[in-house]
Image (cartoon, rainbow over all chains, first blue to last red; front, side):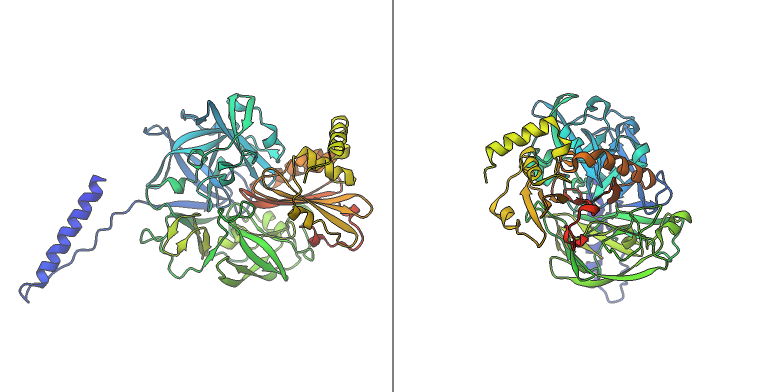
Length: 402
Length: 159
């Protein structure tokens, strides 16, 4: 902070010198030094490659966690970057530093998260999360499969199949940087979400409400600056895909020179304050049908319902047309912004068999009424995600923009 | 709306004896009440308004304590052939899937072994299809029995 102040002071002093020069002798040449803008490093690498998972379109990042307020830190690589969830989740078995647990009301807080019929359960612990120069201090994370809380409460277990190890997830964790600042806004007033439990022993846990300030938190929301959202940039790909692709995750929207909105079109999504049922979604019209839609880096394909497209025999759930399909769907923001988006669906089995870990044309089936713009949509774009209730130069989040 | 106390007690008794046989999917009209009771769901006027008969089936709508809305699709011949959900919390899949739970669990694990990750899932198990999508706090999904679909019902009506 002191250095920051010093830099600003120097810049101001130099600026004043420049102004003074303008009023003096006409022969004086004033050389204005480049404006020194104090910046915080706000960008980390995103790698879409074989990673631990061997599954195409898995964006991986490295995350540094530290015991709060100390220099006792650990780097955890191969963490899945997910704009469809909120907060950092790591497996207990991969954490080697002693993190404190979060207590609330006389017990330890535990957390349950649902991902595509998979469920992660474990204690809430506190860490300083470091991403480039950004630090989310004393931030609540989920520690999955904490051996101290191995009995999964029924309200968590009944929501899906337990994901208990990095070997099962085939990632070391999940970095959720979607539009919500915390992982369960509904839990502030409702205990029955199956998300938060207060435990007086490893097997004695009851559902509880939890104040937002105590919940597993999107680390971006806890940065002192660059805390209104993020942008993900991934390179364009050819139709045949690539074995890997390198991109960036940049923090903040319109807060530094490298995260300006520019000409990106803003598609607002529904804020949580309007509905607890379908927040952070917008509309996508496909084949004449209106769909609940969202943009999700944690989904590895474009998932939509079209019964006319042949599904794969081996990779069930994915589309395997005999020739690549050129399709169009119309995105509609809550603010009325709309555009026709072209996308391709190639034979997913061929892409899997060819070892293409970055592809822009894998499609998969999902239930009628839902359209999931997964990672294929990110290639060749910069996609902005603004946090719910946070202001940006493009308006208040939540929104996606590109 | 207050659930019928006698029916609720019967439902609980049946659940205690044989929970799988009386869960919703593949169950009878009574299983809808059993689900409602087991999950503590309410059926408000808004839910009731959705209960209109759609040709050869009706949609039985209920709201769980979490706020998640569950629709059970009941054929005119008295079989629950599909269940959908949308909301901030997952419903109790064991209750909704009943006898199909273990098959679904195996199919989901097999799918994830082949395609690890956290995206949507769409699998078939024991002649049941289960599909789940959405993002954290917005869970959308459905399970249905293709062989029990009433004649003329299109899959995109189940949402």
